[in-house]
Image 1 (cartoon, rainbow, N blue to C red):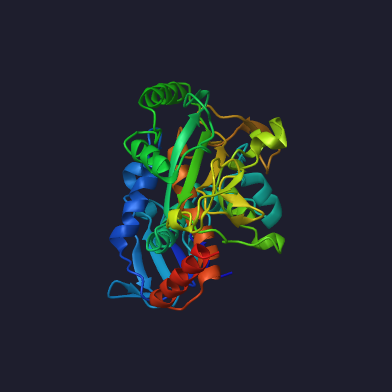
Image 2: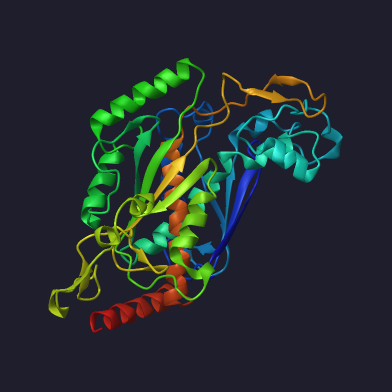
Length: 402
């Protein structure tokens, strides 16, 4: 493992804290760059009231000096503006115990009951505060650093929403025929959409569906796709299960709150056809025609594998698709059982989103960036930007002569 990270903090606590270790020295980094990614996470039609309260700002408190990384762990703090309303209820001091009524009615679909059973809690706020998707703000902040590192080597990351509820983008659901340029164009269109959907007509249908869910006190899930372009072949490895790049990406994306399924490339659709119809045939165009994107004269006309074969990147765009379940916190609550009285009640309601699929896609970009940056630095090595760049150029030169 080249890099690793930790996040801490509760949804209504004083702040979120993140530590990212393993970033070489000499890379440019600023709070302003990270804040732009945080703003993207807070957008999207169907978000809840908290997005009006929080305007996230990443304060870099270590690991960066005069705009450059210095090789030591990077630590970031994001303050929770809502903390002023929860000072006693979420206080670390014992003197404030019982200042807030306990949460004893677990919400179906949340971590509430399982967490209470595991940690012996009679107040499930101890669970829901940490399991909240508020934590993903820090993932986006740390992922922004990974994305910045990768961009120095020409690797771009983006995402777009393909489906919300029963409304989906028309045509093939898999972008396996897209080139890197195509994917960037689709991403550009998605960034202009309130639901981060690249199709304008579908955007309007999605908005109307979200409005309907809001009136009914309901919520919606959906499907989004994350891509990485210009990834050199050879990241990851086939030799051990935990070094396979697709496995690392799947775990990273699956760890995001409310994500219930992950596919690489064609994914489950591969199971529907014959092998001859889904494997990506290999061709050779000669070294003189090789580009920085292919690095070698080898190329594929299709990308059903989603840029990964045998646990390694193969030079094609990496495609990851994920399914997000509807937000389980509903204004129209489901039935549950009070953990103290064992009586049946309507589950408690915490302020929540109607649809967070557009935001989840931004979080997935961050997680994909962290996973690929880890594999990239593992492969290229180096303690400074200059050393990593030298190793990267040497590797590309080697590939071009293969």
